[in-house]
Length: 410
Image (cartoon, rainbow, N blue to C red; front, top):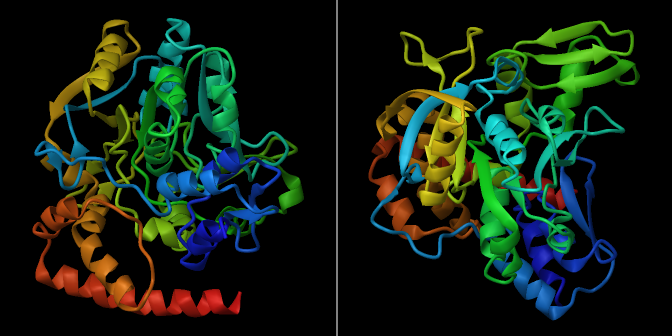
């Protein structure tokens, strides 16, 4: 049966909730919706066409985020890197509202104001519900600013992407690393992507938390859901706070460290714990928090003016970055190497170094894992310590058995 590919993803809890299967098969056949656990998951209404099923099998980021080739220039932790800069948006408002210096927002504004693309596809707070995240079609600065600040909640930025390819005009896409990886794979099946999507931008991602995490923050702040007018996870500073705006325009907030570390991070979906690419390897440009580092080596979350790592991954991305700098949209303070990124984004590095052993653990107990280039994972594993590999293997076996039991009881 052609719908078995969706059932395989569901059985192994590998769905990212991106919505691409809905876009390919059509909303009358598959619809991505919030489930009882607070994640976006596909619901099948009709048997899929065989061709649609085969395309989904190849492009679904839950199943496949492998590179067609992995050149000698592919860094085992950070992907292909042209340059790595530390910088921020030149515009003070964009820098303040953005999660990490507003670099990606500044690039999007540049693309629109210079008429390089007709619109930008990103995500923003839901119009009808402040706890939801929706696709945002931005055509000007105001609509880009609407999308500033990280959205640590389920989102399906690809659920209408195929229909957008039928519309007039070109656009840039901004999404999670898995979203961009899916688009790159879809380009093999739909040549319009290379013609229509001029730039793909991404950010380093630590995973998608359940919507229940957002509601837990609201509850911990002593607020009823019905009282909330707006909700921001970050922004308005760096790192910024999780902030609830009530209908009487008063606000309550929780620090970034508390909201992410203690509420949101423990509720990250299973597939994200197995992610081979949390760093946006398939994007033209990747942005990431360039945290200051405390004396003990941990990130320093003291409020400061935001700054970002800006990783250009190819000539397209490097040319775009150079034009943004030349046109005054981005200020760059320095160029750095991969060792600086690893020092700051050490959780991303640790996950990549230990991922092969996590994959082996899950395959041992009969669970599927996303497809990714084994040669890259082997190189990353060589950078890990034996203790970290054994710890990751044992921990993954334990969590895998628990996840499998939980799925049986759903």
